[in-house]
Amino acid sequence: METEEEEDFEIGTPEPFTKEDELRHYRDRYEQMQEQAGNLGILITELSGKMTYVKGTFGQGHFKLNMDKDEFDKLKKELQDVYHHHRTEG
Image 1 (cartoon, rainbow, N blue to C red):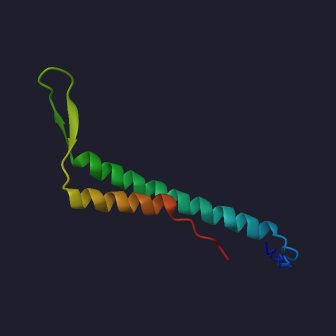
Image 2 (tube, one colour; image 1 turned 180 degrees about the vertical axis):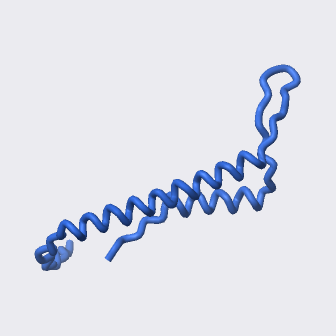
Image 3 (cartoon, rainbow, N blue to C red; image 1 turned 60 degrees about the vertical axis):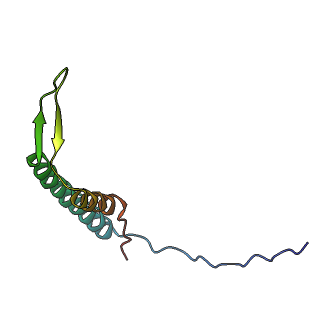
């Protein structure tokens, strides 16, 4: 049985954040989240405009989304990109 030797990595000391850097980071992140929330609000408004109420024959009615498959797939991809887009700030 062959054993592999582990490599030594020098991590070094991280540079400390200044208060200004930390505030800038949190302010930028807050603005990004505000923009995402605004975009989601617009999306919900658009979606609600494409919905119609269908009265049930023997029970409760429901809402129907008037959207073709391609539009729905595009919407799912956009939402997936929004929630899985994590970028690192350098």
